[in-house]
Length: 396
Image 1: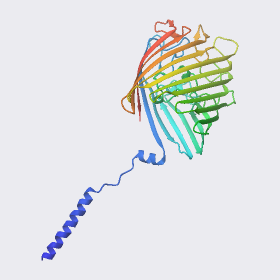
Image 2: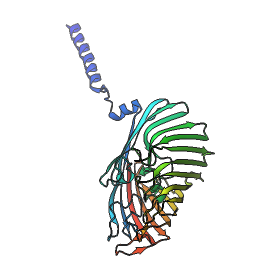
Image 3: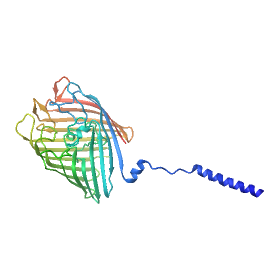
Image 4: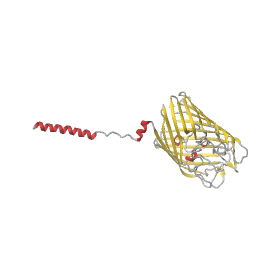
């Protein structure tokens, strides 16, 4: 009898132990979508860029072309620009293995989308608010990576992707330079110091070839990283481009050459300086109000100083000079005739990072032209304009 009782107790104790172990045993973790993407080498990122911008002008030049790039969407005559802007909402899906096949897809929505649209994919459509900004396949082997499709330009210190820029407003040399190219590009990392780049594409912001032109644009790049303190990136583009007034890529065709050089000095871990110089030329340009075609020329210089006070506070200053000798890039019309101008701008931006994903920016900017280029709300014109802006950039 005692043996039966003891056996029953032992069985109960063992059973209780088993039940206790069952109660605390963790369930098998179900992998999240992020886990599966990480395991496959696919990265999904994105950002949201919203802002408020107020100007003492309409945000237009004589001739009706915007006096700024990106930050004055919907500017109209007779009204000082004062607007909340959904600049960009973007998603980037990428896979970039060190060896083998990869690719990238970058979709940009918002009020900046019409401005970056390419020929054949929304250029000239004011309702184009969803842009396939980049889409390319890649293949990497050793020091060489080849991409084919639609990709961002190498030229210029500033980029389409808002979080990578230090200021809210874009420089004129960014806006009147190329945004994207469609073609092929090969990158060769020769050493830790030297990277060589070469490619061929349809031209500036063209998915479809310009009507009447079968030529391509060649692309050469050279990046020298002399030390952690200094680097120099040089890009040269040459090919057939549209040569009508302003930024359009229709009508007459001419050869365009463009050189861009970016020097970066990292003075300390908190302070760095950037200089971006560009020089462009295009022949057979048809300018509004002028009968004979001309060779249009322009050059620009932007100087940047960036200082990180603390982990959360920073400031960025930009000084820019843009010499549009014929009015071809800026599209200024005075009395219905294309007019050259020299533009200067001074921009000060203060950034406050709430955390690594969210930054607030405050900015003040002053512009000046050698012409009475800027249209005021009373219908008058001025050679100066200024603006104040607040921006929030959220990354995910």
